[in-house]
Length: 371
Image 1: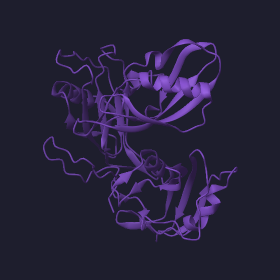
Image 2 (image 1 turned 120 degrees about the horizontal axis):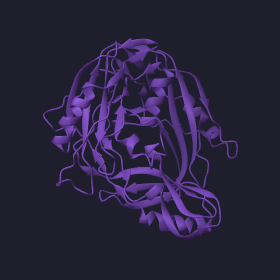
Image 3 (image 1 turned 90 degrees about the horizontal axis):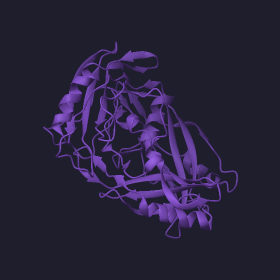
Image 4 (image 1 turned 30 degrees about the vertical axis):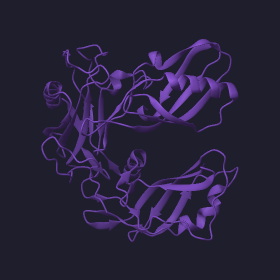
């Protein structure tokens, strides 16, 4: 089982070459994980659903990793979860541990029923999967919250100036990733550059971090020494010198380049930069004529290394007209591609919302991973 730590990272970085799938985690805390991946019992069955149906779960685990109770949001229409409830209540867990001692733990999870290639499927997503060395960001953050862990934070980053060099790749933007260590009284101890694609900007922003304001991590109300990872992104379209960060008013994420210029994480993910919209002016695409209806369509998308949507799948039902216009809009969307911790452009799977507003020709496109 991999160790997850709010403070001391257990991954060894060798020069500028970083591991492709780093261990996440938090000082002295090990998240619970499934003992067996094949959790569905023979007596339970998977119900039919045309569109994906998701239920949010909470496993209340004992010190031994046994399920004391299970809470979930039921699907009142098809009661899909009822068909697998026996299996869910009999899952075996490797228990959570803190400072090498097993502890009770509230473990959030997500259950999805879907029809894939004409086969009924059910997928259980946990905060951390030690067998596959995968984690789910939103579930990890929820697990920390439910169990009294509050990661360290950056309260304020002062204004800074950035002069852009002529050799910047216009299909990308400079960024730098830092490992920042904070003690239990919120004092900065160390700033380390662990990845960047432009050394000039990385060195400049290191000095900015030395003058920033931080808050220590806490566990059940007690401050603890910790570290966090900060990504600074240098967008040429911003006005420099910048204002202090975070912005006083956070705009819609697709519009807020200023808000997304700095990202803070309690653990290191394999993706440093998710795709950023490159051509969504005012957060959307201008259509050739006014829309005559209100609707919102959710679409799973894959953004390729060129920043275009290479494949997509509708998540929510879409009317014939909304579906057809959505397909046209998807072909026009352009992103700055995602980067991994080595600065390499990579494919990215995420979800967008396409919002139609009657009597308007601006179709809003919200990239959910930026919210």
